[in-house]
Length: 129
Image 1 (tube, rainbow, N blue to C red):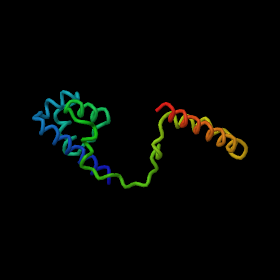
Image 2: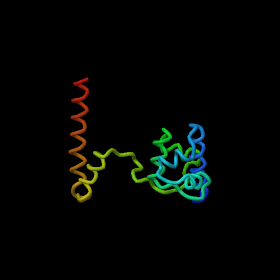
Image 3: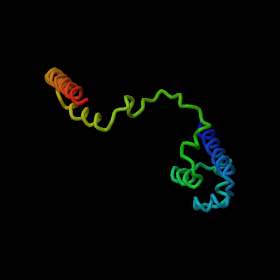
Image 4: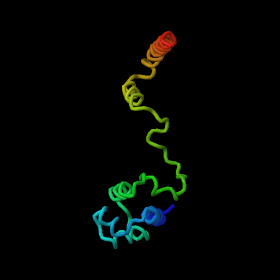
């Protein structure tokens, strides 16, 4: 989806959320610290909302920021997400600790040690349950 279309759809959502809540362009403009003409430009897709303005609009309209993107289709790009495995910060920190190790020399020892540790922890959990 091109940038213009996304800008227009986000603007249309802004207008929809504003009107559903019975808020005038002027009141929204005051909350965003812009002119009502600028709000008109956001709503008709002429100008893009910055992330800050979008966040403030969501807060003022009592809507989650994601509400502005509900009319957009799910992403179909093939980009790899930053964390495709949904690792926790602790798991990422652990993986960063082992990165400098030599796979040929250190991984067999690491595997044996972690396997024994994991088995002991699971056994301890069973006893505690």
